[in-house]
Amino acid sequence: MKGKFVTFEGGEGSGKGTIIRLLKEHFKKKKVSSVFTEEPGGTREGLAIRKVLLNKKHHFDALTDVLLFIAARRKNTNNIILPALKKGLWVVCDRYYDSTYVYEGFAGHIKLELIKKLHELARIKIKPDVTFYLDVLPEVGLARATKRNKVAKSMELRFDEKGLKFHNKVRKGYLTMAKKEPSRYVVVDTENNTIEQVFTIILQELNKRFSFPL
Ligand code: TMP
Image 1: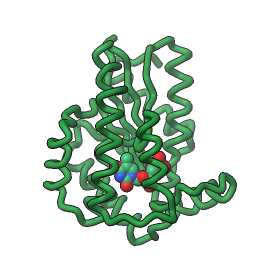
Image 2: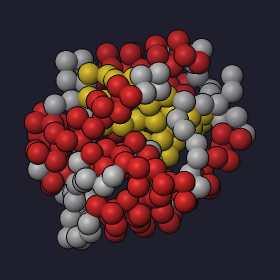
Image 3: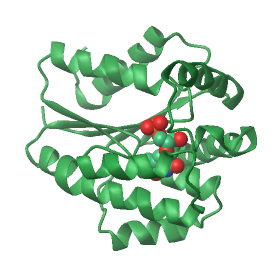
């Protein structure tokens, strides 16, 4: 079974973190070689950029955000994702370029064409084999995220705190992207399904597409 590039997308409080943790355990249990990474992050340098980008005391316009996310993505792509795929490993990435199209494009009003051009300039050319979009109404997701953030006392809240209007545009953006690329995108309702049900849907989809072991 040759490796595939799987990405997860979702708004705040979509359950993405929990699902990715469960998937990591499943890969281990089934002894499937894999690399799990995240954006922004994935490398030491990417994590440093993450801290700069997400700090709620920092202010950047949306175009600067795009440039910084792409800088972290270039490092993650070249140092982690591509080498792993070349070795035939599965790569699971928590967010990839869809996040930039949606957060900075659809919600931040940077032209999608410009975002595409900037990725080309950064020589980021790979495309996920499948993208799971974990869908939740922003009202519900933000309430979950606020609860979690209070416990974690995180400073990485610049995007969480952008307000409901912004997060409604994020959701609309994802649903538009999913409609444009129905064969790559799998939309999973995380509001009316339990975490276990969401996880089962994802495993079955991976199994159907790539004979991934259940
Ligand atoms: P996370 O909390 O899921 O790791 O994501 C960090 C935040 O960064 C999240 O609010 C979405 C945002 N983001 C963008 O705006 N553009 C991007 O390209 C990426 C990767 C994340």
